[in-house]
Image 1: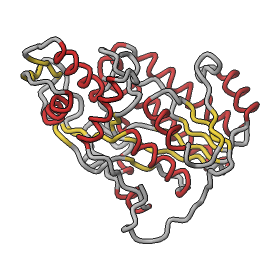
Image 2 (image 1 turned 90 degrees about the vertical axis):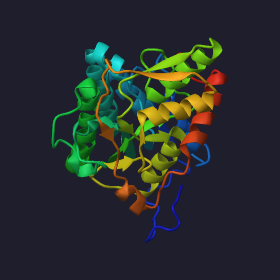
Image 3 (image 1 turned 180 degrees about the horizontal axis):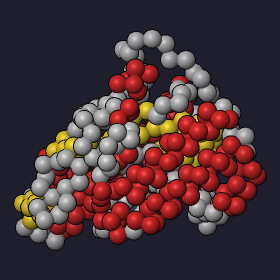
Image 4 (image 1 turned 180 degrees about the vertical axis):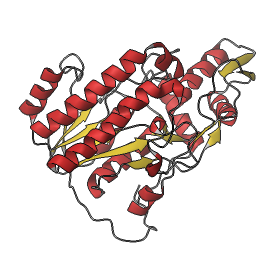
Length: 325
């Protein structure tokens, strides 16, 4: 959403109209939202499924980019998951995400891609970073142990974009999204993130007339949640209006306690039982809120209210639009 009240002009630096735009990871939560958003940009959207393009395979990735010659790339592909998945598959999380970042970024440079946007994650910041987290806090302290494998790979992707910009003059940029939710999310019972996991858990409890639902942790950590379609709109806006060495945070600028968030999901789903917190389970970082001052200064702000966004996500879940349902 373009913020009409923010000061200064918002020059169009990169027009997507008439260009071939490759969305890597188009079936994921973020990638599918970017594809939906691009449909109004009069561009030629390129996608490729895993069977035809394995982004962890260097030769296959380079050949595909050379053959299709996209003008722009949204790099939304990656192995993602919550605390449980990160802890159980550390080699997969660091190895696959490092390979995807290197293969696509270097392959894009080889193929003459004019602009690339890399999607990072707010987990790149130190576990005890001051809140809200500004972009300059990167690498100023230890990472959160429960997702450090994923975070290290995402940090490497940011640095790759910066390195190709500095050495080769490539217009490669990075954005750091906060926690996303929405249509097309992964609802796997073990490998999903908090919003999707809670939607599924409360829905199943409602169907079973269960007296309670257990939520991991104490419920006290605070998190920021952004609708995937808002995020996609921000990505397209940044692709069009930003070119710089530094990455940009993308979020709402507001956070909510996990306990309160669980109650909102419960209300949206229609579960009327008790919420119980399993304090033997890890909380993760005590608070994660992004400072979005730089993004607001460019002229973009999130617009989807949390409850409304979760209602849309639940509708998508009921329609079978998610993965792992």
